[in-house]
Image 1 (tube, rainbow, N blue to C red):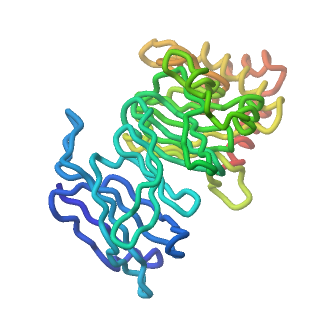
Image 2: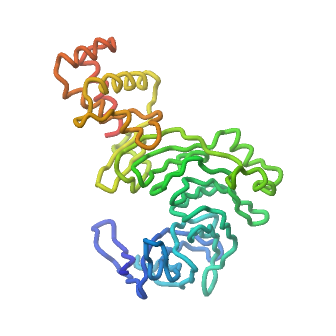
Image 3: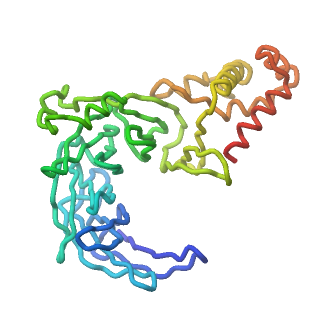
Length: 353
């Protein structure tokens, strides 16, 4: 394996420093972490030694801790040995959360190496994504979708409070709010899973402090389940998810990229009128502009799970390519004129780009 840490100046894209990884190490994850015990921000890199993917195995791993110097370069502070491959990491309350295999660990700063404080090994396969907000940790598994984990500060414990009933192979994750996670999976699906408000409140105000959490689980699962809010099949493996705006003053949307190089956006609707308009237009377009190879459009968008609460904007945009007679017929069915439909599509597009 050959890996390196490259420090780049964003102003002119010049390389300030390259730190080569030695000893057959493969860098798998990286993050910034502020350690309260040290009182400064560090660059943390997780590596695996002699990594193989089929079967997934390695000869161990390391956590490299780097300190930033005044000139923007980094200096190695120390390396912490691991017994597996680190799949994901993130900062959490002045410490470091790390997923090693199927174990979730919490590390604190030490002079010679990082100190393991808490560990939870109750995850199915391999942790691929980690996010944290408040007292809650969102863990993405390579085969078993999201797990919502509660951190109990009083006794320093972590326990799973909710998981998903769908076996999703998570490749990308993004927290949308305290109870909602957006995710992408290996088979080209984008979805949003949410913990209902009453369950979330019950988890936060648990009087037992998680003591009976295992007793109330079902079939070795968590006691609560997240509910699917949005489901859409993109058709290509989703690599990354983020929130953002594409223009000044534009509407914030969910941006995704795929393995084949596609960059796409999911835009939230602001009114019921827009939802009704796009739903009816999509319904007409499915009839008037079927796919080239004859496959049903809804069957494609529901390849793995039924499509839910997402309008296919690419299909609606094909309205402009239809013959004028067909455009007029669709507009009459929708009680609008052709120009009104074209103006509406343009307005929706202009909200994000």
